[in-house]
Structures are given as structure tokens and as C-alpha cells.
Amino acid sequence: MLLNSGNAKTNQDSAQDESIQVTRNLLLNPKTVSYEHLDSESRQLVLKTIEFFETKGKEQLKHDDHERVWYADFLEFSHREQLFATFLTPAKFGDGAKRWDTSRNCAINEVLGFYGLSYWYTWQVTILGLGPIWMSNNEEIQHKTARLLGEGEIFAFGLSEKEHGADIYTSDVGLTPQSDSGWLANGSKYYIGNANEAALVSTFGKFNDSGDYVFFAVNSQHENYELVKNVINSQNYVAEYKLNDYPISENDILARGRDAWDMALNTVNVGKFNLGWASIGICSHAFHEAINHAANRHLFDHYVTDFVHVQQLFIDAYARLTAMKLFALRAIDYMRVAGSEDRRYLLFTPMVKMKVTTQGEDVVNALWDVIAAKGFEKDMYFEMAARDIRALPKLEGTVHVNMALIIKFMANYFFKPGSYSETPRQTAPVNDDFLFRQGATKGLGKTRFHDYRTIYKEFNSPNVKIFKKQIRLLKILLVVGKPSKQQIKDFDFLLNLGELFTLVVYGQLILENAKLMKIDPALIDQIFEVMIRDFSKFALQLYTKGSTSFIQQRICTRMVKRPAVNPKQLQHIWETYVYSMKDQYEMNP
Image 1: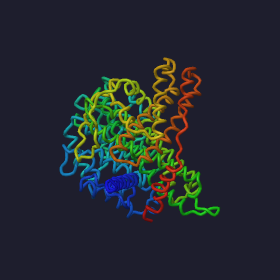
Image 2 (image 1 turned 90 degrees about the vertical axis):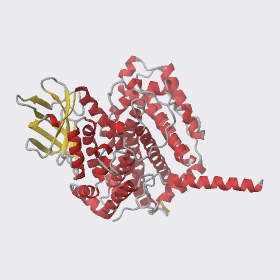
Image 3 (image 1 turned 60 degrees about the vertical axis):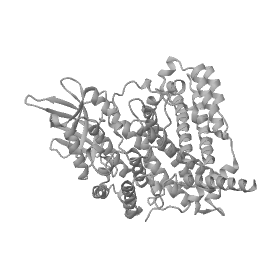
Image 4 (image 1 turned 180 degrees about the horizontal axis):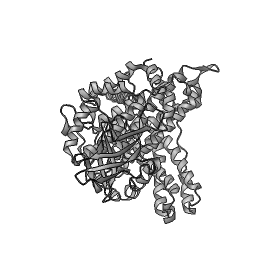
């Protein structure tokens, strides 16, 4: 019996050690990351991308950022190594390792965000520009695009306009039919990344005669394409461009009518997912830099990391950052299994865009409270992080726009679950075909989700249990204190209600991934400790709204909960995960 007991303990210790190691590997460390889940060629390309930046070094990286140097060196690297061509050419139009694989694309998203948002941005805008092309039925332009990618070209997405923003109901770009054949395009687009050098700019507009929507492709180097200016002060070129009697033939048309409309929204569905990953990359680099600084700085006879409030700030930042990555990793799985009968990704994608990026702001804010004035210094990566982390919640639709989408799913999520088989991790090296044939963008109210309660029932740590009580109270609010017609029109009211809903979804996918990846239960409980505080904050904000009814107020006050605080757990998180990151990574000078 003693021998068996000893073996059981050994097995338990081994499992715990494995769990700790997996958990430690959650955050990107370019010096140690291996990308074992990727195939050999993909792995080598991601590691070569890391090597490019480490060879470039932080001093040159910061110089190019400050002097707003166009990233020709990175684009030359991409051409030489066929990075964009390999990762962004669907298998149908390429050979070898060429495919559109969301899992490995997110590895590049994270790496580029880690080293600088400008490098991520040219990749991101190329993805957006390619979306309408790969979604179209125009095989001639598709084959041309595959060839251009191989030649190292970049692409752009001409959707937004100066006067209308991303309001695609209204477009001032129009195609006028010509008597002989084809059309002449006139009008301008605004805030269009890569539009200075894009080989093709996928442009959204209308036919002037019929008023139907249209997507068509133009070349940024054409004489009738006027590059007005770069509208931002950055390494990026975010252009205003004008089309002045630009000739368009049938071969340039990507889609018409409803197909063009759906193409615009479906492209954004693919592209917005990347913003959360850029935020994860930025926060990871900032975390390394912040812990290195704080752990080596001696003040008032103590190292900065000896102070309890500093440890709490770091633990909160770490919990938020690991939660961001756990959620985003799990969302990849639902992107990759999506199909005409499984559209759950339509909820999870805007959440990666909206929730993960706003959490990124909270992470950087906490780290900045620790390193204080150091965060302004020109030689610190953190200076870039503090600036760039603000951009991501505001791109590809604001937080408010994405929240309006997310709220549409709330009733079905809570009260009408669908039946789905369990979704395993999706890391197979296959092409994600469905992303380019998503179909009509209407009928969101019919989307069903698997029952969130299933995974919540499998976790019963102190803070998960408290959070489940908050969920039950939210459901009571939706039934007993159902928002009135007037409240439904009050977007400020719905925004706070939506924040409560997104926390439930956020927790669900975090728990699913914790189970799949065997993440340390102590970290998961600590993540929920933070989420309880966030839930309480939004419940209190909902309580204070002028339109909140008496019954809604009563339920909101019950939602405000105190998390279970475990000093031993805090010490475990601090010593095992946070402080252990000290001096583990610093970018080459």
C-alpha cells in the first residue's frame, strides 16, 4: 500500500510539473520558443522572423520607429523568405507549405506585435486586402495575386472614407459605365494602410447607374490613382487616395451587389481576429521589460518587486495576459471548425478583437504603474507599447460596434443552446477553406452555441464558484428584469450589459482551454479572481445608470461579489510564474 501510495504521489507530482511547465510557456519568449505544434517549414519561417528582429536589434528598431522609416527591410525579408506568400496564399493557388492556416497565422500575428505594431500592420492590411480577392469568383485575378505574393508584393483594403468612416451603407466611390466597355472609377478612400505600395487595393464602391455595391481591384502605381498623403505620423503609410477616371474592366471586378456587401463584412471577420493577437504580442514584450526593470531596481532599501502592491500589479497583469492568450488560442479552434452549420466563430471573433484588446490596455496600464517614468524613455520598447496598445481597440470597428454585434447572440447563448460535438484543438496543417466562403452575413439571430454550463460544471475552485453565482444572477436579470424597449434603444445601458455577457463567454473559453492544455488550476482561479472584480465593476456601473429599474438595481447589487483571496495562491503565482520571468528575455541591443 505504501509503495502504491508513493507511486501515486510521484505521478501526481509529475503531472503538476508538466502543468507548471505548460503554463510557463504560455507567454512568448523569443529566446526559448520552439513552435512544436507547427509543421517543420512553418516553424522555420516563424523562427526566422524572430531571428530577423533579434538581428536588427532594439536600437535600430527604436530608431526606425522614431524616424518613421518605411519598413523596406522587413518587406525584403518577407520576399526573400516567402513569408507572406507561404502564409497568405490559399492551398488552391499555391504549392508546398502554402495555405491559409489561422493557427500558424496567429503565431506571426503575435511575433510581429511583439516587435512592433508597424510590422504587424503591413501584414494585417495585406490580409484585409487579400480577403475580397480570395473570396471572389475571379480566378484570373486570384492567380495573379498568388504570383504577386511570390514577388513580395503587399496589398490594401479600400473600405473606409473620410466623410463616412467604415459606414459601408454610404460610399462616395462610384463606377460610371462607358459606352465602349468597362467603367471609370472616381472617388476617394481614407485611412487605408499599405495604399502607397500595394500591388492591388481591394476597393469598395457602388455602380453609379444601378446603385448596387461593388468590390474591384486597383493598382496603387497606376497614373489615375492619386496618393494624396499619409494621414498619420508613423512608419506605416495610412493613406488617403483618390481614383480619377481610373479605368476598370470586367477582369478587375471582384463581386457585385449583395456578394460585395457580404465580402466586406466577411473580410473584416477574418481580419479583426488578428488585433487581439497583436495586443498579446505587445503586452508580452512589455511584461518582460517591466519585470526586468522592476526586479533589478533598488529603492528604499528594497527591490521594487519586494513591495506588495507591485507584486499585486504584476500578478493582475499576468492573469489578464494569460487569460487573453488562453481565450484567443481557443477561439482559433472555432474559427477553424466553422462551417455553414457552425457559426459560433461570429461571437468569438469580435470578442478577440474587442475583449482581448481592451484587456491589453489594462495589462499595459498595470505595468506602467510599476515602471512609471521609465515607460516614457526613448530606448525602451515600452514607449512603443504604451502608445500602440491604444490603437487596437479602435481599429476594424470600435469597441462599441463590436459590442453591438456581440449582444445579438446573448439570448441564444444563455437560453437556446445548440448541440455540437466537442471541439478539440485545431493545429493540423490544413487550409481554412470556409473563411473564404462564409456566405450571407444575415441571420445572426439564428446562430446557436454549445451549452456554456458544461465546462463551468467541471471547475469548482473558490473563485470559479463565485463567478458562477454572478452568472446565475445575470440570467435572473435577463428574465426577471428584462430590459425594456426604451433600455434596448439606450446603447450606454446595453454596453454595460454586454460587458457582463462577454465575461461569461470569456470565462467559458478560458476554462475549455485550461482543460485541453492542462493549465495550472491555481492560475485559472487567479484569472477568475480578476474576472469577479471586473464583473462587479460592470454590475455597479449598470446599477448607477439612470434608466435602470428598481428590480434591476436590486439584482445588480447582488452581482457585486468579493473574490476569494488566497495568500498561498498569490505567492505561488508570484514565485512560479511572475518573478521567475526576471531576466529570462531581453531583446538584442
